[in-house]
Amino acid sequence: MHVKNSIILLTSAGTLFGNALAERFAQSGARIILADKDHERLISVYEQSKSVSNNIHYFYMDDYKPESIEALLNFIQVKFNQAPDILINHWPGTPLPSVTDEHPLEQFTQNLTDMISTLFSFGQMSAERMRKEDQEGVIINIMSSNDQNGIQGFESSASMISGMTQSWSKELTPFNIRVGAVLPSEKIQDTSSNMSIQLDELIRNTEYIVENEYFSGRTMSA
Image (cartoon, rainbow, N blue to C red; front, side, top):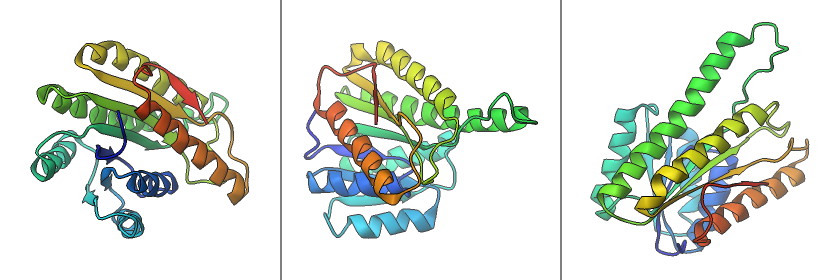
């Protein structure tokens, strides 16, 4: 699938990664919908991106509950008369706690629930819209970080996202919907230049998955 003229839904857009990806895809001629529940950051990314292209839109969400995602998808349907072609299912990495932490259970349960429920809800509901429209689609699960100190202990989260990606691919391949994932391969070092390099890797791998018609069910590292 080509980025140009595609309708791309970017979740958790009010982040460093969201900002960089929105600008890159806008330059490539995509029609982009930015979604986030952080209104201030969402507007900031929108204002920067719209200087690149007029095909940038945003949708503020109170939360990531199913009814809010349904409202977002209805907004896209009304504006473009179709479901998104590409879902960038972005999770701004909240790592799962280590088993050596003193009181990991409550944090583990909350982080796991937030991550899985959010990624699953966006993925499942977007795929359902694509299927109803009988349209080819791409879903890319991505984890990134705003923190220059990196995503501490992200391996557990990454493993779950990777497994979810493989499972979705098997289910959605018959409907011409591809699923891939892009995950950070190591801790981001504490310099802005190294973070910029990793963000660029995340973006280039995302572009590769979108453009490569044979990529599905696999994970790329940045």
